Amino acid sequence: MRGLLVLLLCGAAWLPVQAQEAPLMVEGAITVNVLQAKYLYDRGALFIDIRPSREWGWGHVRGAMHLELADHFGALARPHWPRQMPLVIYCDSEVCPHSALAAHLAVSWGYLQVFYFRDGFFAWQLLDFPLGKGQEGEIPFISEAER
Image 1 (tube, one colour):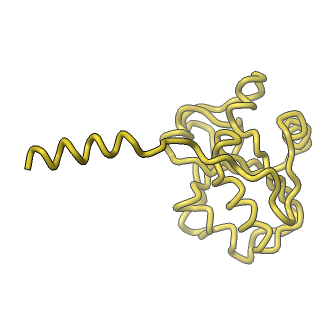
Image 2: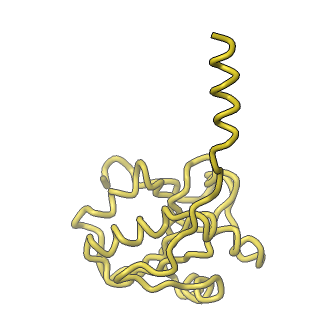
């Protein structure tokens, strides 16, 4: 039994561990870099952070709505959300493909202005753009009544 455990642990060390790069484009969405995202931010676009709650709590774009992809993001499919509202969807960086999936879903649900912020939160943070941290004064998720 002990030999099997050692074999499994050694075998696991050979598995390649690498982040998956996000696609450059999402059909129907507009890919934006960090400066373009800031331009949209200054004009009132809704930023949607699809990262897990733990990462959201460490920091996010100030005023962003937290709709974790696995839990709350699907609420945007509801018909009462205005489809002309500009959405800037982001994850942590260009090695996070989840924001591409979220942008694709938003386009498929009929949103007309979907901006895929591929560079993500790390690029935003690097340029010292407005940050939020934790939950205080932020929109952490859509309430049960709005789902």
